[in-house]
Image 1 (cartoon, rainbow, N blue to C red):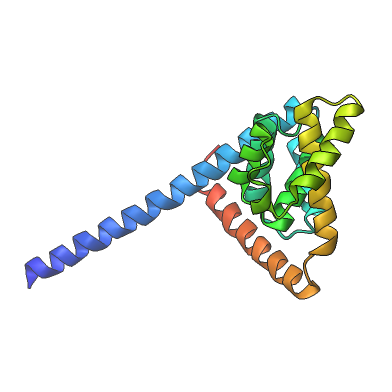
Image 2 (image 1 turned 90 degrees about the horizontal axis):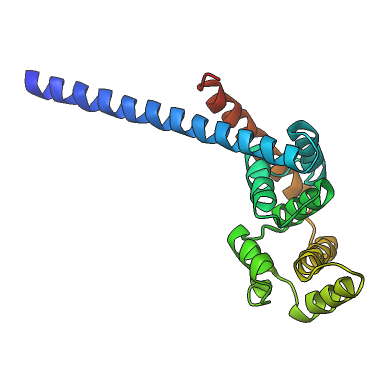
Length: 189
């Protein structure tokens, strides 16, 4: 029985250590996301606080800050969005429509049209808009990105969230933001 008690105590300490490690690791990952977002925001001539405020407003508080910063940082680092306005628009559309970011990033980089269906966008609509933008002087990549953003914005008008679902998403985002603030407080800066 003494061995069983010692064994149970050892397992309990091990589980507590694993939980503490997981908490510290999650806090460190959030800190990395925050710092990366701040540096990339500065690289396009804005600040993290200003851009995050605009992202929150654009998504109506339905997406957690960590998700917003992570998505926006991905778009900026891959140069899929090169201005504050474009980052806000693309992040807002992707977040509010629940787009798979891997599909979106691959589509915007490759410009093949093969992944547009996974985003709920029509190939013909995006192609025709991209041609218009190219004729106006945009590069092919800029035109493709803008065409996807505008097609997404048009889709948001048709398939927007109900007030009830929006309220649930806002509550979920607020809870996630609170949890993430606690996680970040575990990491000393």
